[in-house]
Image 1 (cartoon, rainbow over the protein chains, first blue to last red):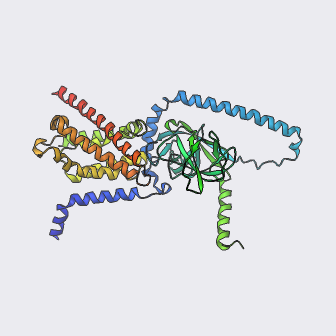
Image 2 (cartoon, rainbow over the protein chains, first blue to last red; image 1 turned 90 degrees about the vertical axis):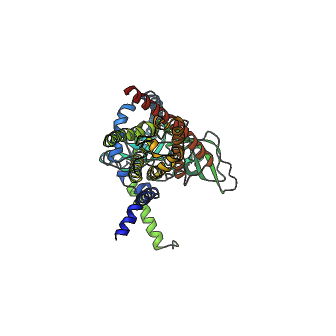
Image 3 (cartoon, each protein chain N blue to C red; image 1 turned 180 degrees about the vertical axis):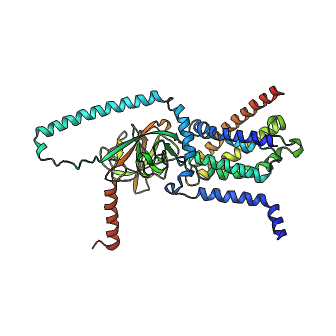
Length: 289
Length: 173
């Protein structure tokens, strides 16, 4: 026994070293960002409190740029309101107002405004932290956008902060389409440039031009259809594949994110149930007979 | 020694938030990240045992991982760096007596050996961190660029910190 203890003491540095390496590797290889405990993410109390404190100071630095963005967005929305007003007017004039079925009253999408308190762009897997959490109605798997375009998706929530998987993270694939032609594919970050991503899995007969706008497809319950994402830069030149890949310049400027909005889809639950029903049906009846 | 550990604890509590809030975001050209918090491992006197230095290294790395959402990356690399600290120090300083319990610095080691020790430690750390991060996401050109740019950036900052600390020490004496 005393020899064993002597042996352990003699080699304690190797034991301690191995112990820490094993713990680190366990943390490192736990791959799924949704399964991490909130306390070891930046949405935990320790990190979010520090980031909020720092953000109280630094949030003033970019106000000029943020103001410019908001003014631009305001002008766009104003234009949109005007065109919608015209459309409503036309519909009224056509006498459709009597025959239109009123909606259920619950708005389809609602938005929570939050502030980015921490953000990274230099890692291969980037995350950001926002100052709203479960107490404010934020849940995992909600979409996050800013005034320019799609930003990411919520992965973990603390009571007053949440961690968001950035679009600059290969864990996040976003279903998008080319606005002009409606061909859809999957947008994923390429890992080197925070201003670019690639739109993959497009069919080979896709029609596109440089400068075409890429918008969300709306095929998932997370983002509404038609949110701006980016613009086509050029084609990736891998001819061997069955699919096209396009290089996309992103609209959201990840180097200076300020205010963001969290998208709540009030019909997400309904869609999820429908999808589950579909899966159960196909399990019962694998050949669809 | 107690005095040193009180100083070290204060230093630890100042360095970690500074790294997380300031230096993690002071990235140059999208590639060079200043990882100055490894100063916490580099500055440990040679008399501090391996068990203690590895523990301090692990917790410093783990804390930074929480802040920067890189679970395990910095914890693993800091553990290895803390373990390799003594052998690396002995590459450039032959006897423990030369340092006599003081922190490695340009003053205690001399400029040449300290620069070699500092650059080896920083290069080792940057190589480990960016290689571990690049596991599933490999671009060799980007990896080498990140390692070299971050090593240079961190080295310059740490050498500057050491010079500032030295001039303060001298003005006290």
